Image 1 (cartoon, helix red, strand yellow):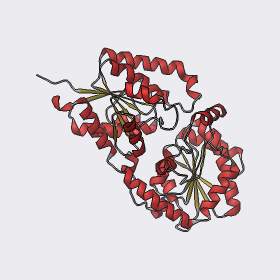
Image 2 (image 1 turned 90 degrees about the horizontal axis):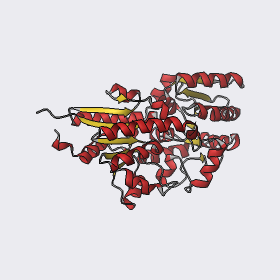
Image 3 (image 1 turned 90 degrees about the vertical axis):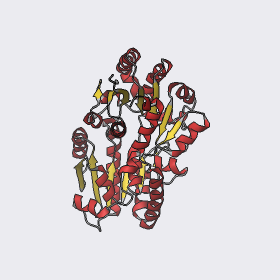
Image 4 (image 1 turned 120 degrees about the vertical axis):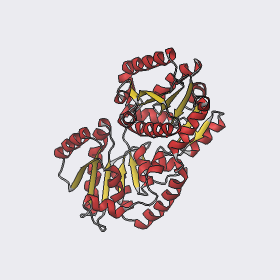
Length: 385
């Protein structure tokens, strides 16, 4: 008698979630010989044999107000998935990030008897803390990337497994700065500033002109300063080229991708928030975080978020380890002052690197492997192998 394949539903709406999903799929496939994956995923998951029922970029919306513009489409997609999996339940449904979309999908499925897991905790510890009630109803297991998140769920009696962060597994503990500089054509003695204005069109539109003005002012202090600007995609490169053409010419290297190489080569990084801040931490690089939201989203953020910091290095340490301008609005003046302070003080940067190394070791836990074990334990796969 043949045994039906394990059916695992996964939904993610971001490139970072696609990376997590692909790693989880690979780890699951090592442990179970016959798995069918379906839902919503990106190119890395597709390469692993994932059946994506909708394009992942349809879910890729950010901010507090911006998703409202796409609400009818998002509701149609979620209704389609919900009915599909209610009619033919998977063994487990895993929502990767995208909590506003995924929790409302996980809840009815769990109530109907399907096991559910959520991979990457919502920022429930920062704002909208009452969501913990909904999370407890919607998920059988929360998989967290960060240790302080797991402690929060334990305090609220939500089943949780801290798995660590896959980026901490992928990036080496020691960074080869010289190799990165050589790859980009820089020398060991160059002073380098990397600009990372985000991967979305709206982010680049709001941040890139301000970042370029900061770079111009830093050049007044350090005329030999090298500036490198990675474009996250072909579309972002076209957008950045237009912004550069409309402004004052700068001695700047615009490159395609290679964000890790650019950050590894840099002395200091000016960046948007999010995963990039964690990447810079794991690369042991001083950074300044400056993120400008749409005005209405900013006002809602000030009203709703009760914690003092939002960037991961500061959240992980519970203090302002790196200069952060999110709740405090970023300006050319405050960003320039912070960047120049880092460029002027290499000894402080070295001490920061030591602290980043300690955090890197804490987050290096074979995340995909631990997540796969937790998922299979949740659905008791042993009876099916």
